Amino acid sequence: MKEEFKTVARFSDPLIAEITAGMLRDNDIPAQVFGQTSSYPSINAAINSVEVKVNAEDYDKALALLAESEKEN
Image (cartoon, rainbow, N blue to C red; front, top):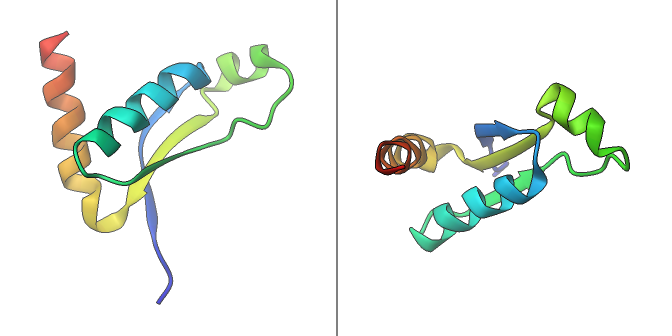
């Protein structure tokens, strides 16, 4: 069976994307960071090309957790 990933957040900063993915993983939601291949960081900043993705079945739980985290900050 093919695994389906869904994007839960986009960032221009790969470090923030990794921190976000780590927070999701700490809450038992497997997460991966995609789009860190540019050797020109200004390109990432211009187009928010770094994405945090989760399995489709974890999508709603991940969005709720990210929204809760935003309220706390």
